[in-house]
Amino acid sequence: MAKNTEKITIKIEGEEWQKALDKTFKKKQKDVKIDGFRKGAVPKEVYYEKVGVESLFMDSLNDVAESAYKKALKEAKIKPIIEPDLDVTAVDKDSATFEITLIGKPDITLGAYKDLKIKKDKVEVTDEEIANEIEHLRNEFAEIKVKEDGVVETGDTAVIDFKGFVDGKELDGGSGANYPLEIGSNTFIPGFEDAVLGMKVDETKTIDLKFPDNYTPDLAGKKVKFDVTVKEIKTRILPEIDDDFFEDLGYDKVTNEKELKDEVKKILMERKQQELDDKYIEDILSKASDNMKVELDEEIIHDEIHRLMSQFEEQLKMQGLTIDQYFEFTKMTHDDLHKNMEPEAIKRIKYRFLLEEVALKEKIEVTEKEADKDAEEMAKNYGITKDELMKAFGSKEVLMYDAKMRKTLDFLKNN
Image (cartoon, rainbow, N blue to C red; front, top):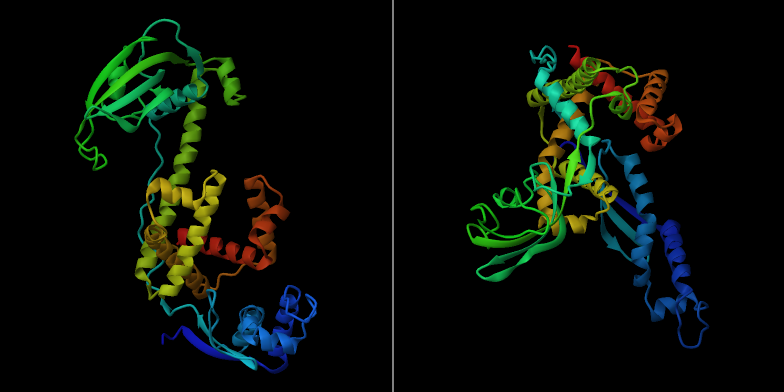
């Protein structure tokens, strides 16, 4: 058994176990009907004889599991870092026996974590990047108008009806009506959008194409015909670079194109600086954790993977999707996702252990005053109240831990 693993046997018996059985019996008694007794009035002795005390075991075990865990913690020599594994090894009318496996932090040997000679890149913004960003902003505020005359051009949205045929048969899922196709989005297979260029409203055209060799196995490399009709053409009218545009952007102090470029450059500089700062931190953590020696228990890795999967499910919910829908769309399984998340889980665990060990070695601590100040700044940045932030953290201890880890991260960045 690994040094960071401890198995403890806990026996729940006597009055404590009898109370658990009685509590379960009273719940079940309400719905039990035995000949000769009113529903809900069956005596315990009769219930035991007719139904069996075994029917009470499962709920009673759940009822005393927390008590067993607390007793195990009192006896434990290690501090568990993940939820314990509780196995019932024996149960009868007199007692229940649990074997509880506790897993603590593994042995960690820090390597080099200071003066790592990691280069921090300098922020640069080119004129081309500024021009592209301004063009992007103009597209965001573009006015969409129906093109009364003319043909489909790059950047237009062609509203089309289309139907695909392979080997003379209609392609399953290869048709649509009033589909808005933005020319230049590369939404369809290569050649489709190029063939729509130059078409007029109400024009119908047959497009002969071939599916790419790396397409789905049943269609890869096959010839396909599409009957396409353009129903409507929508074009984007970009705004002029003028006061109205500056007002739409919310740039109060911008009055001309030069000032716009200066403002955009400033924003791009800040964005790039944040990206470079994030990369610098990642490089430090990556190198320092590579220098660290630690063997991770499979249970610790799986615990982190489950945490990541729960977070992923929450993200999907915010997009209006369930995990089952995600599996259906991606053709992935639960095991596939579990496996894909393992590298990220291992990385997060190592980074967390690294920061905890550095904080311990460098005697980095956080006062309540420092944590409160951090909380106020974070709440302000997130646009929420401090109380809302505290609710998100769950407890003062979690807030203090988070502040300590960020303080340790600052130490690594500056050393």
